[in-house]
Length: 313
View 1 (cartoon, helix red, strand yellow):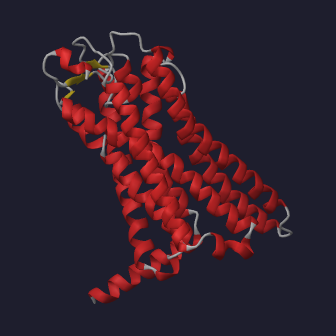
View 2: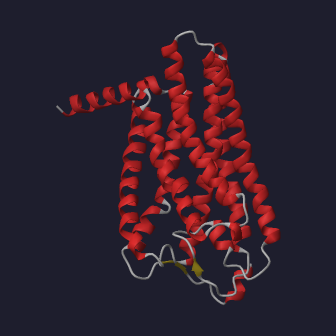
View 3: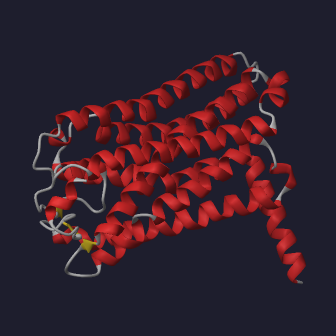
């Protein structure tokens, strides 16, 4: 491995917005609020989906997976970012950086695939309702979820290996809040074009193919919804699908901006802000979108809360 030539692997200095210290307090507030809402929202969804038998369906099985994923996804970066904001020297150990890179990349890739699987589930439910139970059987759902997790971590191992094996020639200043592929590639003192081409290929598989499948699924869903005679039914269906598409667009749009262009062409500060959207804002919005706009979830939450309080009494 090339890092052996750098003597012993040392930690990294995370620059973040070191040139704009006045942004530190607003960022700390945003991180604290977002992380708190992410924890509360995702834990609530997991609790309700597990405890309420009426939610033991494919849709909520995948939603539980998404909540677990988002909770781990933000925990990989946000606590360390908050600690760094509270001290003068913002750094991370080499081992911590490697772990952060692998886990963050794995969970991000898994979310891309899981969102595609969830859109397929909605497509079958709306466009093939009579065959829904047959197609989305328990074994098929478990295999699709397992495929998403396995593929996400496999992609992460490949991309992380390529990134970490680039020679850095002692460069240790990462111009970012956390360890991420585009930021680490900028530390290389060698020609990064071949590695960028390989990373681009993996990113296309993980980003463009799932988002294409999602758009196709929602295209068929939109056609089915337009055939609904009830105006109120169409409004509710479009409202739900529209809110899902907003989150999907925000997550995929910002991730595509970061990973499907050369690191050198990414604006220094804009790239950092974009990473906050798919790394922090989207995991916070997912539970809000998938629960507050979901009548079954709200009713299940009330049932679970009433059972808990009755048990205490």
